[in-house]
Image (cartoon, rainbow, N blue to C red; front, side, top):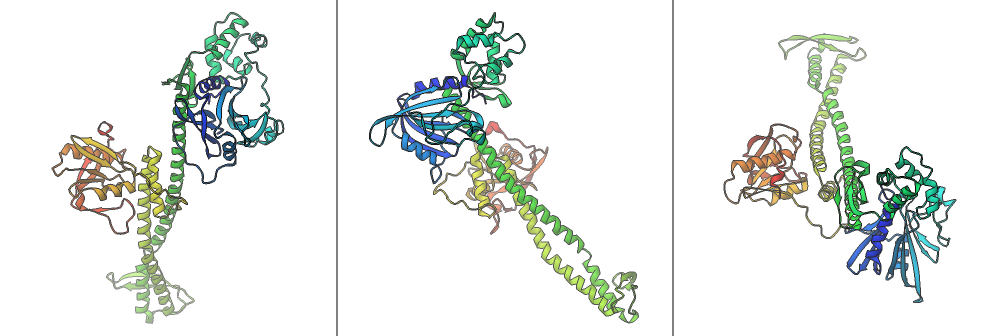
Length: 559
C-alpha cells in the first residue's frame, strides 16, 4: 500500500480540519488490530478507525459497523479510561515520518486539565498505536517484536521515542536536501528519490520524477520536489491495477487503469478500505466454508469408493451358493483330499463347472465353507447397498451446497449456508445466536410484468418453494444441481417467453452453467413435495414438462 509520509501528511491535514474540536463519545475495539473512536463533530457524528493491521494500517473514517467482543481488549479499556469525553485539539504528521499524532484535551480523576497524545504509527507489520501523557507511554496496542524491542522500548512507563530514522533527507532541511540531490548524475530519477528522500513510496517517487523531469540543477529539482510534496493539487482517487490499486491523494499520471475520484481524501479512504475489508471477509468466509464442505466431500468420496469396491468383490456371491449346492448334490462322488472337481451345473443345461476344494477338508466341509462365504457376502451386500445409496445422497447434497457457495457474491449470502450446515450437524452451533436476523433476499427478475424469483442456497430454495402459491410455476434443471426458480402466475397463463427466461436463469444458476442446451423441468408448485426428513433443498415433483435452453443471467431483467 502507498501509505507513505507524503500521503499521510495530507490525510493528517484534512483530518485536522474535520476533527479539531471533536468530542470522543465512544471507544471500541472490535478486533486485536483496530480501534474505533466515535466522535461528535460540528458536522455530526463520525467513526474514526485507527488500524495497526499489517495489510490495512490506516487512520480514516468508516460507516461500516463491526461486532464487539463480549470482553473488551485491555488497550480498549485503557483508551476508554483516558480518552472518553476528551476533545481533539490537533491532528498532525510527526516530522516526515509515517506517524500521525492526535492530541486530546481532557480531565483526569482529579478534574485537572490534562493532555493525552495518541501516536498512530502506520508502518506495515510494525504498525502500532501508542497512548502517552507528558511523553510517557501509558500503553500500546502491540508489544514490540524482539528485533525492535532491543532498540526501542514501548512498555508502559517508558519514555516515548520515535523509531530509528532512516539515512534519508527531509525536504524541510533545504541545504542538506540540495546537497544530497546534487549527487544525482543521471539514470533512474524515481529510484534515486525513493532511496534518498524520506517518506516516499516507490509509486510516489515515480510520480515525483515525472513532475521533476527536465530540471535544470539541484536547486530546481529541490523546488519542484518540495512543491509536489507539500503543495500538490489534491485530487483524491482510487486507481491503479493489481498491487498498485490504492488510494492516491492526487492524480498520479504514472498510475494507469480506471480511477474513481472523490471530494475528500477521507471519503476515498473510507470507500477503499470498506470494500477491501468486505472483500477480505468474503474471501475468508468463502474459504472457510469451501474447506469444510470440500473436506467432507473428499471424505464421502473415499467412503463411496470403499463401499463400491466391497460391493464389487461380492458380485459373485450367488456363484458361491451354487458351488455349495453342487458339492452337496454330488457329495457321494467326491473324495477327501481332492484339490478340485468338475461337476455338471443343472441350472445351466448341465454345463461342466470347475470348483476348487480345500484338500484339508472333507466334501461336506467344503460345501459348508462355500455356504458360509455366500452368507457373509450376502450380509455385506444387504448392509452396503443402502449405505452406498445414503453416501451418494449425502454427496449429491453437499455438491448443491458447494454450488451455492461458489455462486455467492456477498458475505450475507453465506449466513443461510452456515445455518444450513449447522442444522445438519456439519458445523458446530454458535455460542451466541442473535435474537432476530433479517432474511436474505432472493434474486428477483421481472419479465413483461411477471415476477421471477431465484433462490441463492438450499435454505432459500426451501423458503421460496414453501411460500409459493399452488398455481405458481416451479423450475429446476433436470439431472443437475440448481437453484429453485418460481414464476408468480398471478392466476393466469404464463407466456412462453417468460417460461423461457425463467428456464435460462435456472440453467445459469446450476451445475450446467457452461452447457449449450440444458434440460429444465417445470411444473406447477402444487406438484412439488418435500419428503419428510429430507435435507434442505430436496424435493420430489411430478406432472412436469421439460424444455432445453441456453443458460443466461438475464441481468437486464434483474430488479
